[in-house]
Every structure is written in structure tokens, then in C-alpha cells.
Image (tube, rainbow, N blue to C red; front, top):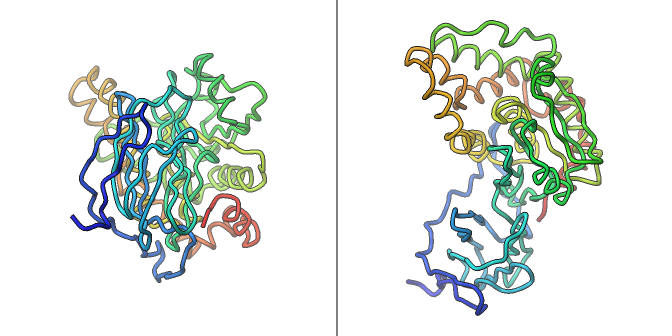
Amino acid sequence: MKKALLAATVVASTLTVAIVAAPAASASGWDLPWGGRHHGRSAVPFTEATVTAGADGAYTLKWNAKGTKRVEIRANGKVVAKGGARGEALVSGLPSADRQWFDFEPDRGQGLRLADRLIKLDGTSNFRDAGGYRTTNGQWVKMGEIYRSDALNKLTDNDLAKLQRLRVKTIFDLRMESERTKDADRVPAGANYVVADVFAGSGSFQVMPRTPDEAVKAMVDAERAMVSGEGGKKAYTQVFEGMERDRDRSVLFHCTAGKDRTGWANASLLTALGVPSETVMADYLASNDYRKAANDAILSHLPAAQAAVYKPLLDVRPEYLNAGYEEVRAKFGSFDAYLEDGLGIDGRELKQLKKDLLVG
């Protein structure tokens, strides 16, 4: 193995770090969602950096910092792993915490502060961080600023206390009135709760599909309504303006499953910030993994024919998200035009949002 692929090293006696083979280089993702390419330079040398929490309390850390010779990773102020420009380490033995943060520090350039994307709560299955992604010009979306989630009606008192400690200040509820009435949110004390009903006045999901094909069409049509429907434009305007204006973050937006209305909100945010389209799609499709247990439980209690109709409603699929982007092109011409003409987010506001949410 080349010297550049130095294995991670144990440097704290109370920790256990397992040595794992260095990962293959990841795709750089330079293609912009709307064509064209950007070859700007960034102060952050990392092309890859992730934290993944295991069920056993250990954390898998991966990194690739091109042009560097050494990377150190700290947790709770102590070095827990170090290695060459590219590596992978398994760190265990850390004390329990609401959220375990890791500081990736290269020997040259700007570092990153990262955590596992999933926020573990008793009352949710799809509460996660919107950040931790690299943009097309090499910047990174900050973590701990914007969160996305499924419904909050089952949050426990411990969950609410945890959200307070995570500084959740503003909550946007993207659900319809019937959903909000049936399963009212529980929100942390002092948080600003805002109704931003995406489907207000749209007529979406008023009739239950009868076949799997009808279910897929309903999901595609709903995605288009999120983009060009009056309720969708108003709701996502509220969300974007809330993120841009709120200097005392964190901001949370959610719907019922945290995958469709919430999925478009996050896809729009990441696209606006310059995250590559393939990364945006992967983040969107991750709801299938986070919600697998919940979805399987629902389908297992249904007759086969009914389950076949429900499954497209429970899934997220590329064709759903792509329908949203197709609607953007059809109705606005470009994503920048969608932001400005559809959501009222002008160049100055977008610049401020990028300044607030990007590092590098």
C-alpha cells in the first residue's frame, strides 16, 4: 500500500480504532444539475468525508483529502484517529452524547466538522441532517444547521429535550390540515412553529389510487404540484426565507413520512447550494433505507393486492424527484429562475444563504 494510504492509528488509550482498508476514490461529481461544469478551487481539501454510526456505538470514519499528507480526526477535543491523505477508521469507546461530532483536520487547508447524518429519536425514523455534502466547486454544506424529518407527533419528552439541546429554533410543518389535526406536532419549548402547507388548494391525494400504476402517477403528479402549485410555491418560499433569515439556527422542516414534501424541500436546498445532482438524488433515495422497517411493517399487514398499491406511495423513486426537476424546466426554464420567480429568492438572498451554510 502506498504511503499516501496510511492506516488510521490508535492515539487515545481509552478508545479502540480498528484498521480497515482505505476506500476507493469516489467520483468527484463535477457535473452541474443543469449542464456546464465548474472547476473552482476550495479551501477544503476533502473530496470525501463521512461519519457513520453503528448499532454497537462505534463510528466508521472515511476521508479523502487530496493534496495533503496527514489527516487527524478529533472527538471531544482528543485525537481519535490519524492517517494519510486517504483512510478509514473504526472508533469505539466514546462517551454517550446527543450527537457525536468529529473534527477532520488536514495538515493543509480547512477542516470539516461532521457527525452521522441520522438523529436518533424515539418518536421518528427519518430525522436527519441536511448537511455534510460537497458542492460542485468543492465547498461543503455545514452540518447542525438545517434538519429534515418525518412527523413529530410521537416525540417523547426526552426527544423534545434533545431537540432543545440541538438548538432547533424554527419548525416548518409541510403537512395538510387534516394531517396536522389528526397528528399534531410536539415541538420543543421556545421553538417557532410555522405551518407551510405544500398541498393547500392542490387537490393532491384526495382519491386513493386503485392500481400500482395509478399510485405511481399520483406520486409524480404530486411532485409536479409541489413545484408549480400555488400551495407548493408559497410553502417552499416560507421555508427558504426562514432558512435565509434565521441567524439563530437550527431550522427543521418536515411532513408525515419525511420523504416527499420534505424530500423536495431538501433537494431544492441542496441544488440551490450547488450540490451535484447525483448526490441530491442519493440523499432523496436514502428515505427508502431510513424508513424500511416502518414501511415493511405497514405492507406486512395488508393483503397482497392492496400492498402492491401502497408500495409506490411509501417509496421514494428517481422518477418522482425527476418529475419535480422536469416541472422546474417546463414552468420556469432553469432552477435559478424557479428560485427567483417561483419562490422569490433573488441572487442576494441566495448568496447570503450560501455564505451562511457553506464552508470552504
